Length: 224
Image (cartoon, rainbow, N blue to C red; front, top):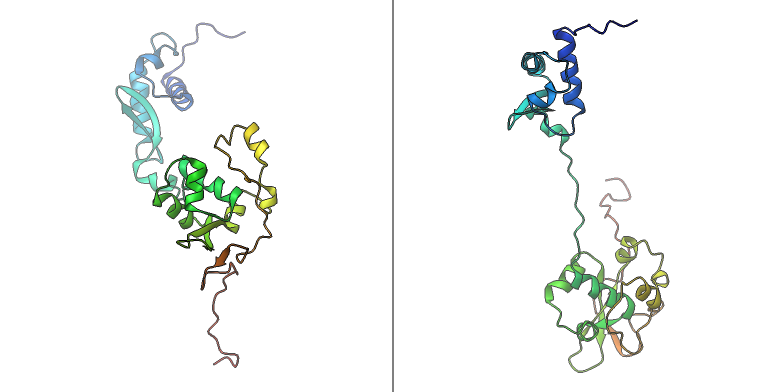
């Protein structure tokens, strides 16, 4: 039979305070800690003892706005630092432009603007080119010889598409609420078999043909 008159000693009080601070989702005041301890427990002594015991350790007890918490020692913060590349987020205008190019390629800047109903800033296309989602494909055989744009293999990789045939259909996108633009006549999922020299379009001379790049090996065959 347990002794109901048992009063924990200082070491046990310290142990309980330690448990409370570790389990707390936020810093605790001395009063909040005391409410969970037996009546008459010396909360201040337990906190002071813990602070001294953890001083110089990997985890230290600190007071913030009259509340107590355990935290990683300041000089060890570098261990928790993780360097990673944050993916760049596309603006609404960039996403709309990318969708139009994907579904209506090859298309010109003017055609993109016609579908969106607003003018297209140069920075939007520059961003898509920089991220390698679109490429310069050719020039239209029309006055002014406007440049045409098409998507890249990087675009397919980023959106986990095996080919352009795997793009969602227009009706699917409408049903999902992803396409609320004015759809022009003839707007359809593009045919991936179209070439850069298709009717009404000339290829860009000297333009990258999309072949993979390889590191140059400057070691001569004879090993010199």
